[in-house]
Image (cartoon, rainbow, N blue to C red):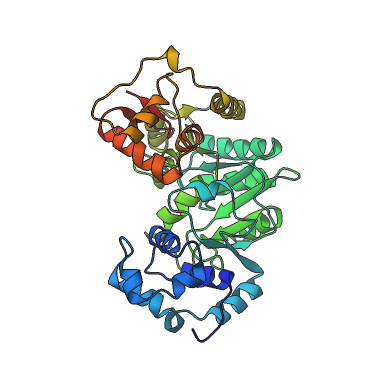
Length: 373
C-alpha cells in the first residue's frame, strides 16, 4: 500500500465501501483474523474465497483508494464535530457487538459513552394524540429511571420519545440515522438533532453525505433494536416500518413490547398484531421493568433437567443433542444463555438451534427465546 494505515483508518475505509454490506464485512474480518489492515491487503484470490462476496465487492475493496478519500472524510468529520467509533473502541455499545451483522464502526455526534441500559421506543410517523402522549411519557419515565431512550429521530413517535427523554434532568437519548450523520432528516428536526447531541448522541454507520433510501432505513432499524435491551412499539399500522424493527429485535433476542390501541384505529393495528403474536403488552413503564427484571432472574436460575421431559431423538447429532438437553427443564432460552450453558461459541449455538428448529425440536418465540416443542 502507498500509505501506512492504522487499524482505525482501515475500519473507516472498510465501513465506507458502499457495495459491501455488514455481513460480508464481518466475514472479511473473520477471514483476516480480525485485522482490518490485513483485510484491505487481501489479494483478489483471497477475497473471492470469502462466502457471499461479489465481483463488484472484490473490485471495490481492491480499488478503495479511487472511491474513498480518507483524509477528506477525516476533515469533514472533524469540522462536523463528530468522531468515527470503530468496533474496537471502548465507546462501541456492548449489546451491538452481539447481533449477527454488527456495523464495524459508526459516526458519532455527542459525548455520550453508551454505558446506560438502552430501551428503544419506535412507532408511526402518522400519530394520534394518544400515541403522542404515550411516546413522550414513556421516554420521559425511562430516562428518569436511568435508561437511555434510543430511536430513529423520524417524524412522529420517534421524535416524541426523544423529546420525552430530553425533558428529564440528566436524561440520555440516542438517535440512529438512516443517512449520513451530517444530514438532518427530516429537516424540521434540526433543533432536536442539536439537542440530542448535547444530552446523548446522534449516530450513523453511513459515510458522510449518504442520503436516506429504501436500503438505509432497514439497516438503521437493526441498530436501533440491536443496541437496546427492549423495543417498545407505540403506534404502527399493519405494514409499518416499526414492525421491521420488531422483527429484528425478536431475531436478536431482544424483548419485544407493544402498546395496545383501539381495534378500529389503523395506527394501532400493527401493535395489536404484535401482542396477538406474543409481544409483551405494556400499560406502563413498570410493566416493562418487571419484565426485564423477570428475564434477568430467569437467566440466573439453574436448569432443573429432571423437572421436564427428556428430549431423546435418534436423528440428532451429538452437538444438537447437547443443546436440546438444555431445554429439558422446560425453560425458554436465548443464544447467549445457551453459550453460557454449553461453553460453545455464538456461531456454533446459532447453527445448532437452527438445525433443531428445522427438525422440529425447538421453536423460536417472538421475543427471541427458544423453547422445546
